[in-house]
Amino acid sequence: MARLPSRRVALKWLHWIMVPLFIWFLLVQPKDVTPFGPRAFQAHSILALIFVSLSLAWTADLMRRGLASRPGPKLRGWMRPAHRWLHLTLIWGLFFVAFTGFLLGLTSAVLLKAGGFLPIAPPLGLRTANQIVGTVHIVQFYALGAVAGGHALFHIWRHYRLHDNALRIMVPRRFHRYL
Image (tube, rainbow, N blue to C red; front, side, top):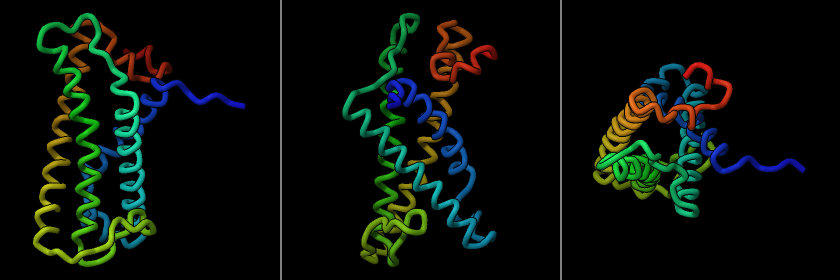
């Protein structure tokens, strides 16, 4: 019987699966794919379902076992607690983006289905609430995108300025020779 990968390996995979999905949703909105037909919209919706499922799994892992990352010995002063808060903001931010997505389905006038098959929530037809939640959802996601960009820059800075192998820790082994 095959063993499950260690927590760190599983989180590495989760992290690197989430990165392109996150970038996709920063750049592509449903209105961008609808001109390409229902299959394109369906594919976008399936990607969203995968993204939300992974976000919820990451949040569940955090709630069950806490943060997997540590700040490392070379981080000093305010950067040590900032490291923790940056990671918590990202993981909980992903959860709240998923939650506002659920609220979008709940306040919608029609039944929305994730991936085209999974009902998000029973529609209550609350037009004003739906507009407010939609705005919150969009602003929240793009703000989280800025945090994710800051997160990436922070770790690139750590890797090259502090020489603490911050990137090597999160990059699969086969790419270590490029760092």
